[in-house]
Length: 235
Image (cartoon, rainbow, N blue to C red; front, top):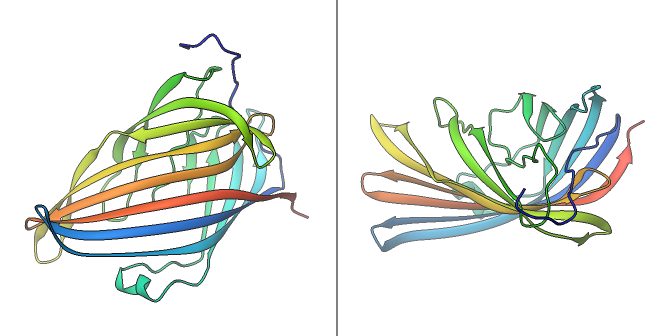
């Protein structure tokens, strides 16, 4: 640790049959350009509901959960942008620091990894986490940087505010007609983590994807805000 402030032991404190409900707002901006010349741009946004149900908690504090994402109605322009949001059900098993042990998902997940040791405001930590995308033949090793920026109240919870960003990663992906694209990915954001309850209260994450094909860069910026709206118990 680099700070002498009161240490914060950040860990998930899941309970069996616990149900967490989140409002999710997704905004997508797309732009095509050749060099500095913009060829076209478009944007859209929509709301979804995410419900996480804890199935079991192991003696070591790790938990098994099912996540159900129910998207709302998509705007008309979404289909033209290649966006087709559907109901998604995934399972995962993570430890109390957020490390993924098992998942049914093949898509990306926010790398909200908590530190192994207690921290204080101003402290930092790093982590290497794989990033998987359907267009990639294998996961990319992505380096994440975290920092505790503050401790304050969020929606009635005392939270540690944690900012994060990744190093830019690159990959070559196959395209139709035997073409290849050079893909660049980068992410940044922040999350509010309830200290006593050990749960995510708010998450804001921005993912920037920039594939380049035949001299044209297709930039997509996806901003997601996830806000806790309910905590309950399943019957």
